[in-house]
Image 1 (cartoon, chains in turn cyan, green):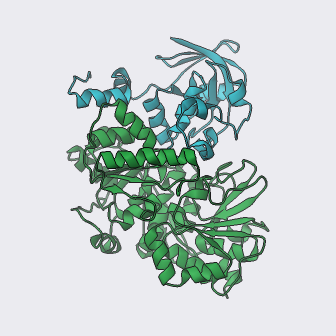
Image 2 (cartoon, rainbow over the protein chains, first blue to last red):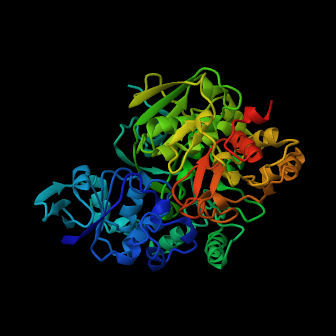
Image 3 (cartoon, each protein chain N blue to C red):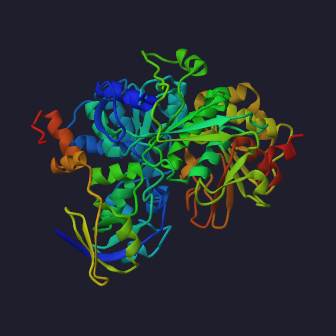
Length: 169
Length: 421
C-alpha cells in the first residue's frame, strides 16, 4: 500500500485544542469535527486539504487533552496520516485505537517542506520525497501494537476476548 | 536495583516480581472514569465491542462536568447518552448535577482514588491521583471502553524522573508555583512517556491539596503520571474517605531513576505561565505590566477549598477592579458548601465576583466565561494553548489562586504582597 499526497506543515507542540477546539466537542460526528480540524492554527486547512495529504509536524504532536475527537477529526479530513518528530503519549494511543496512521521520523519531519509531495509505504514506514530524491525510514511500531493492529485494533481485540475467540500472537 | 513506586504498583498489577521500564504489561485496574465529552465516545465503542455489562459497577465513575449544567442542546444529548448508560449498566458512581464536581477534585474527595491503585481516565488530568500515591493516567475513549468491558488495560512501563524540592517556600508560593516552575524548567515534553516522582522536604510540608495541584499538571510536561509517595498526611486524608481496601506502595531505597533534579525553592517567587504554553513561565515580578480582562479561579487544578481560602485571604474587604470580570468556580458541591459556611462566598460576592456551580466550563473554552478576540485572562487552570478559553486571538496566563485574586483587584498581573500588606 503506497500512500501519496502533499504535505501540510506545522510546528512543535501542536496540541489537541488546536487540532479540534473544545467548542466543537458537543458532538463526536467525524464529518462535523473534520470541518473544524486545525482551524485555530490554519483556517484554510479543513477547506483545502485533499484526500491522501499528510500532516508533517515537529515534536510532541497531539499534546494536551485526551480527547479522541482529535484523531477522529484528523482521520475524517481524509489525510493519509501524520509524520512527526515525536507524538504525545495519549495521542499516540488514540491514533492506534482510531486507526489513524502515524509515523515517527525526526529526519523526515525536518526534511519535508510545505506542499512537498510525499509517498509512504504504509506498513514498512518508508517515507519517500520524490522531488528531493530522499528516502527515510520511520521508527517501527512496538511489537505489541503491531499485534493489536493485526487483530483488528483494540475494539476487535476486546470483542474477541469477550467472545473467547483465539487471539493470534 | 530497587524499583520506583510506579514500577512496583504496575508489577503487582501484572503479577510480577519486578518490571523494567519499556516492558509492556496487561493489568487489572482499580478504577476507570470518563466525563460528558469522552464517555459518549467510549459508550459508542463499548457497544461496538459487543460488551453487555461493565466489569464492575462500583469501579466505573462517570461525571458530567465539562459542558454542564448543559450549555446547549448538543451537550445535553451527550450527557443524556452518559446518564442512560449509567442507569442501564447500574453504575454506582454517576454523579448528577447538584451532586457532582469537577471529576479530579470530586474523586479524591469521595475516596474513590486510593494509594496503590491503578487508575485510568478518559481525561488527561487523571494524573491528579498520583498525589495520593496511585498510578493514574489519562487515556482516550476507546481505551476507556476496553477498560469498562474487561477491567484491564495495557501499559508500557514508564521510566521515572525524580524531582526533589529543598528549602523553605516564601509566603504566597504554592504547589502551583512549584509545578509551573518545574514545567518551565523541563518543557512541555520534558517528561514525555515518563513518570514524575515529586519528593523532598518541601513536598512533605505541602498540603494534600497542593500536591493534587502538582500531580494534576504532570501531563503538561508530557508525563504519563506524576506522583508523591504516600505519607501520614495522605493516609489521614484517605482513611476517613475510603470504602475499600488499599495498600500504599513506596519507592525502594536505591530505585533506578532515569534522572534526578534537585530544586532549591528559597528564592522562588510566584510563577506565571505566559501564552501559549504552560512551560512559558516567568516569576510574577518579571511579568511586566499586563492588564487583564478576566480572572478565573477554579478547575481541577485549583478549585479546592484551600484554593478558595487563599483567594479569599486576598479579596477580603477589597473590590475587584471595575474592568476585570472575576469568575470563581468551586470545584465540587462540598467545596461550594464549605465556602458558604466559612464565609468565603460573602467575601467573593462583596468583591464583585461571579460565583458559579461546579463546572470545568471556561478552563477548556466550553462556557461560563469565554474570551473575545484580543482579550486576556489570568486563570488558575492548567492550559493556555491558542484558543483554549475562547477566540484564537485571546490570551490565557496561568497562576496560583492568590496571584489571580490580587490581579483581579489591581487589573494587571500582580504579586499578592502588593495587595495584602
